Amino acid sequence: MPLIISTWNINSVRLRIELVAKFLKATRPDVLCLQETKCPDDAFPLKRFAKLGYTHVAMSGQKGYHGVAIVSRLPFEATATRSFCDKQDCRHVAVTIGEQAGLKDPATLHNFYVPAGGDEPDPAVNPKFAHKLQFLDEMRAAVDLHPANGARSILVGDLNVAPLEHDVWSHKQMLKVVSHTPVECEKLVAVQQAGAWVDAMRAHVPPSEKLYTWWSYRAADWAASDRGRRLDHVWVSQALGDRVSSMTVTRAARGWTQPSDHVPVTVKLEM
Image: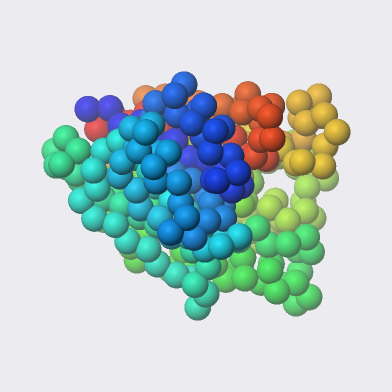
């Protein structure tokens, strides 16, 4: 059966719930992974999602900052969260989708929001950047992010790093800008290699082509300047490496009224 998964840093789920509804009505993914929900669990708009047909929810939220959630039309077999860097800042949630959802073999889905890292790419003077680097190191070391042979796993989210040359509008000008510095790129690639993850987005858009999922609010005309970055990612385990039949970046969402600075990414997996 096909499994359609979308991921989107929504930058406040309650503020932008109508944009989420617009996207869900148009795209109808089976599962939507959200980052930066900025919402404690007891205030999450469960009723609105239920009206849209998304009655299964796993979340890890806090007031005003961070937060991740997975909303689904399909039931979960299990849910889990974990913390990194000895902080309880709601940056990970995972679910297992299996027999109850019609899958013969279960699949685990991880949803991440990696720290942005602040503005100064020097861990000695910027604690936020030091936190980001430590977070990436702990992701690389996390055994549950190393899918065993044959394991069907998916990792999505705002990983806040644009690792490849054409994941940013100007490789040379971005080398000293947080999200594309060499140390960040090396650490994110190390996470990917440790788990032998397949970059599902770049399997459909060659590394030689520009690919963005984020455009700054600071741009007077984001579309005209097109100074984007690919901060949002979809990775799949080796067992699913040849099962991603399509990948779409909903660039138009950046132009919606009061948008997030990120746009949704959707993949279809032939499970």
